Amino acid sequence: MSEFLVVAACLVLVATALGLIRLLRGPGDAERMMAAQLLGTGGIAALLLGATISDPAIVDAALTLALLAAFASVAFVKYGGGLGRARAPEEGE
Image (cartoon, rainbow, N blue to C red; front, side, top):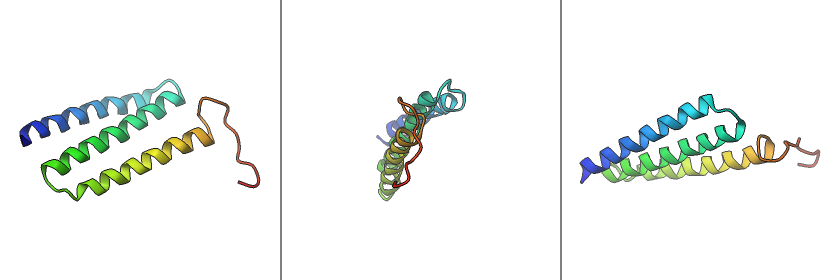
């Protein structure tokens, strides 16, 4: 069973590497942000598979990465590059 999980983790990492290429060469900001989300999701999946294979404490790192990916999406939409026009923070924010 662990051989299957290792192969699955390798496939996830290959897909994540392909997303990294899109991140570096993406035509627009939205495509780059989606590639960054793919990197976060792939990293979480690889960490969770690694936690299943070896050490369950790796789950904490996966949860932290998931939290950071969610904050990155919110920051991207709020401070520029989102679907609408980027707006500068107002004085009270």
